[in-house]
Image (cartoon, rainbow, N blue to C red):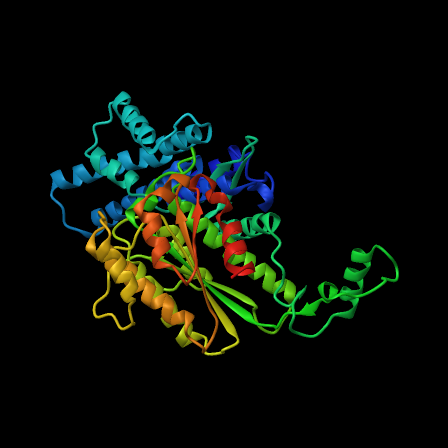
Length: 461
């Protein structure tokens, strides 16, 4: 039966969209967000509805085989046998006639939702006065529980449509977003020539600089500011620590993209951006590497394609903000997995709120000055959050004093300019005093988050 459905779909009603465009189809961040939403909720597109009908046809065929086996191999009473035969006739009629008709209507966009499909099937059965014993409610439950779909259908800003197979979604999104980020900002490779007071002199670049300054060839003189040197070759390991608490479910754009969607897509774009950068450098080792650490209960380090795909598919904004635990997880991973002292570690925290789950016992030295600050001010901030801020300050301060490697920290707060006047910002600013400064990101500009992270965390970190 499924083969008949497949034949009807592919031959009689070929999809006019399937050959439209190629991977460059996604044009911007919001288009990528649309794909992510469809991927995480596959019952939104027409292709999903086709997948539902095909899956129902498959289940229908299995039910027919089971009834046939039962009739042939089991002792049945006359009443039971008659009931099964009636059900068999009905299932065969559904498979041979009703489902092909349903699929044709789905292909023509006449049936828009799973509920429409179910209602249409029920109406057909009622019109035909088919008095079978099949449980229509059970049929409804089967439809609603269908998960396996063929692909995802999306529409771009110009109304063009394309179908993307589920297996290729992450790779497609990553490559497009990586290129999108590449267009936004061109980060200088780590061994690119820069004007510095250390390292070996690059004569060619120094000569060019002197020519441009003096506006003469050859230059009249070479000054200190003309001298271009090679920066020391070091590798960077970036941990993006992403808030996944309840507040991150707030929508950012009209297209219902949440703050979490934006943070996840930023992580994916950085992940592929670094991959492209490493390929261009053609070194025997990767100069940049990204790992994502979700801020949630029992945090884990996401550092490969399969884990990243699972995170994108299953991530949900809920619960409290386990930031202290997530930061410690990233530090533990860096110390265990990357023993080379020539690898710098960059902790990039993206959050829209305050941590609220401290750890006990706490093994780092805490700041008496920060404790005194919270004791002396009037605040509505909860004691657990204050304790978390004190703990984060202790962790960051210990990293700053760690001579085993370079630890860089950047702290991004999602919020409008009005946030600067609130306790959330002032407490965060005080907690980071002497370490770094909080970087405010307007949630409406979340599509620029990757660019800001690269500029603030890597270029100037």
